Amino acid sequence: MSFLRDQEIFGEGEAATYIYQVQAGVVRTCKFLHDGRRQVNAFFGIGGVFGFQAGPSYGIRAAAACDCAVTAFRRLNLETIDAAGDRLSLQLFSLALDGLVRDQEHALSLGRRSAIEKLAAFLLGYTGNFSGSDVVDLPMTRRDIADYLGLTIETVSRGFTRLQDEAFIQLMGSHRVQLCDIIRLRTLCA
Amino acid sequence: MSFLRDQEIFGEGEAATYIYQVQAGVVRTCKFLHDGRRQVNAFFGIGGVFGFQAGPSYGIRAAAACDCAVTAFRRLNLETIDAAGDRLSLQLFSLALDGLVRDQEHALSLGRRSAIEKLAAFLLGYTGNFSGSDVVDLPMTRRDIADYLGLTIETVSRGFTRLQDEAFIQLMGSHRVQLCDIIRLRTLCA
DNA sequence: CGGCAGTTTGAGCGCTATCAATGAATGTGG
DNA sequence: CCACATTCATTGATAGCGCTCAAACTGCCG
Image 1 (cartoon, rainbow over the protein chains, first blue to last red):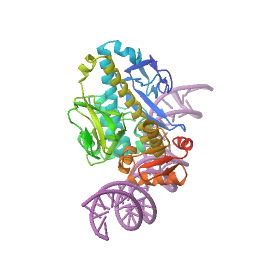
Image 2 (image 1 turned 90 degrees about the horizontal axis):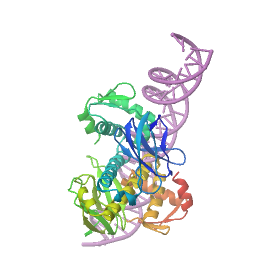
Image 3 (image 1 turned 120 degrees about the vertical axis):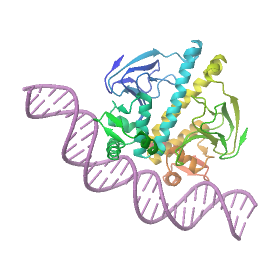
Image 4 (image 1 turned 60 degrees about the vertical axis):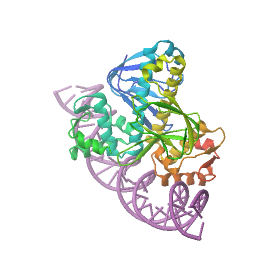
């Protein structure tokens, strides 16, 4: 299945019938407050699996952060997941635990890091998860990044320019960043 | 096993050999930055299960938020969890998914709610999870609450005072709060 | 009573949000 | 191919929320 940027893959409250894996592009999951404020919970790059849900319906919304393609797997309910055999159950469990670890690190950024530190940690995490080189693609918009880090787009933009001014990174267009000094970036994360 | 307040149950990086369930009191799990800043990831009340880990060692620290008692279950590695039978696997998986949902809501508070809104959401969430009445016990310290919500102890204290001044709550000592207007508290959460 | 840890309250500042404008990139229709 | 509109990103000026520093207050224990 293919989705254009900002197209919804599933909505909060929808029946959780599928689990998805990203084939191309990036997907974001997010939650909203009633007045429209948004918190992006996670980005999923190629190979990423999303759509886990504890109850019968999604508690979160998923949408394309850029044009992307995903494959959908019918979501077995919890009772039949076990019956489906050890391997499937094991894989799913392992992926859920990975999600817990990601969320813990994310909470640390949201609650205790400054804007600059959030950006540094974001770039480093993104490198580890999505790319092997020191040049990272950021196909999502500044708004997506801001809502992921609990900041505004202006603060994200100012942060990137400041990181560039201080020779941590080199901006190569607004969706591509070269990490010039990974060591120093790591120390920034505190 | 019994622990006094602030006593460590397991540390970050320790071999993850057990999963724990709370029998009495409250346990907190948290992560640290190198300079000592702390983010409390979750509180676990009676019946709460903690100590899940994706890898072979804990990525988080667990400690007693107040004097408490827990029971430890030997943590089977992922390969043998499945072999242990459907019911165990199912329960663990379900608990892990619950953790994901909690973390999503927590991230929403950390990233997008104001201090007052964080406190309101915290009190309401605490009610749902730990108590049935409109009087909630908060056995943890202000520091624990602050580090859970990404605030300082002063801001937490001022927030409680303000919520009381505006008749949302009634403070009954520093570790007990009566929710006087749950409806209005809910609207505060946005 | 004194000492200590935890909480509350006060004063002032700084980081980030808000408001506003400009610039860059992309798409659209003539 | 070019004017125009639209969206996104950057930059600037200002304000406010929450942090920092500091002091007073409370409850508890020796």
